[in-house]
Length: 301
Image (cartoon, rainbow, N blue to C red; front, side):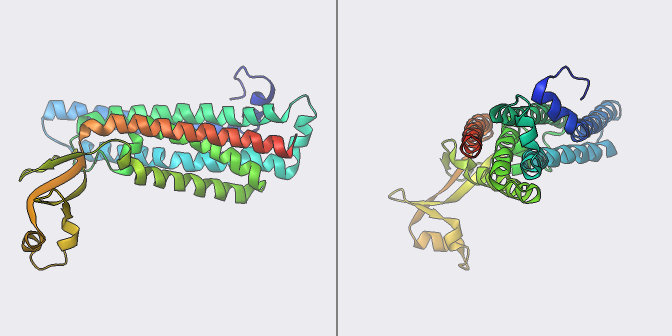
């Protein structure tokens, strides 16, 4: 990292945290190598032997590792930015020395945001791309559910967007808390809460599909949200309301149910939801960044 052509505060940030940055790059390279090797061997053995082998399970194992890495990357980035990158300078008073060396508070914070944002975005983008590439031969495996939260994050730009949000949240937490360990905890908790909130609100980002009749959205690539029966007036009765009854069908009929229905997101909604969620997360990242600069100006004008 120190060999890169950088000047001013970006060079200082890279120089001080080069071990952490190199570690992130090395771990990303290891994940890429694991997926590349297992995918290559799986495809080669499948084409020559024409049957699944132990490499199928090994490929799924490697993909599970990349899914975990992409899922937890925002938490790690938020904690790193909040603690070692921002709060430690404020806690130790190092920022005062930097600000007397022709470095304004705004330039200081900009560098603290830019370096981890670039490195984390590149690592996340590579992991998402390699994950999608490795998934192609086994995309129909029951082990990998399209709408499962970790898999969903690992398959599209939303995973990268959450990393950018983590950088902004980490910087804001560091500026507000100004204590390294506490700032890391606050940033990790806030980022984790935002990830959980994104998963909880995801189903509302795009209009759902409702079907009626006996054959209801049974494809494994669909995301089922609700099911039950419709009354003659079109009111929905959920199966959950009759699960406690001994005979759910009779329970539904007694309540006026005449036709089955299912509400779900089909696989074709995957990319629209990904892009909408990515836009929302990036907007939150911009907002958190603006608030961070405002906090900086208020306390260090």
